[in-house]
Amino acid sequence: MSSWFPWSSSKPPEPSKDSENIANALDQHAKNMIKNTGDLFASLNTRVAGLPPHVLIISTFLLGGATTLGVKRFYVRYLRRIRNGEWVTSEVLARKRWTRGYVTSVGDPDNFRLFHTPGPAWKWPLKFRRIPSRRADLKNETIHVRIAGVDAPELSHFGNPAQPYAAESLAWLKSKIDGQFVYCQFIRKDQYGRIVSIVQLPPRLLPAWLANGKDLSLEMLRAGCASVYEQTGAEYGQSGLEEFLRVQKEAQRAKRGMWKRGTQGESPAEYKRRHRGSADSEETVADSGPAQPSGTSARNPSKGGWLRKLFYRTSAR
Image (tube, rainbow, N blue to C red):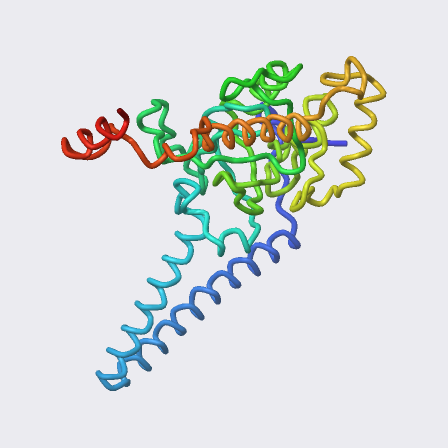
């Protein structure tokens, strides 16, 4: 079989007629498209020129208004930041949309601070919006998120001792999300103003719009860093309560984390009820104060003027 090479003395092969026909057809098709486009623009110009001036003015105004509304809607939906929990309105909660953000701090084993990062402008190569790093710049700029469906061991608060494995649960959560991007579905506000949210870790390989990441609540249960939260209003996302309980049983059988010494210990819910009850009883005693003898409670020499003090001393004698 003969072949042609650049250093060969033979002539290159002649192009076939089929290839010539295809090239001519493509060229003619391109010319027709250019001609049709030119005719379309010419027709539009002719029609616009024939319209009355007031119609042109009204049409321009309506087109500009529609464009402005569209741009504003796009900005509110995809680009505007939710600065803090006060910006999470009932309308935002009703939508239950997924929100991406950057975790700026983890203060407890089951909640954290989220800096909302909407749009594609927070990562390279399109990075032109900055996440603050100083605490002063982050003031009133983060959302306090409570992880839904789980209850982690309590740290020491208000003079109460920490629960066993609280520090380890906090360290585990920090290692997973601190300084990372996560995805939150806002559910509701709790009594402390935190936003109860279903939290997902970012997928490892594919982008988030193609795949879902791991459910953070299930990962906490699997590691033995939390127990299932079963109080009124608990949310479990698509996994459901049964899956949460199944994963917790698996961690208990394997004696992971807080279940290392068995399941007979005090749960976070029991711990909070016990300390809340003791705090309420102490507050009741403090409010009641020491008992006073009858007939003397109305006499208080420290209150009133010099005439009342003199009358009190005279009557006391």
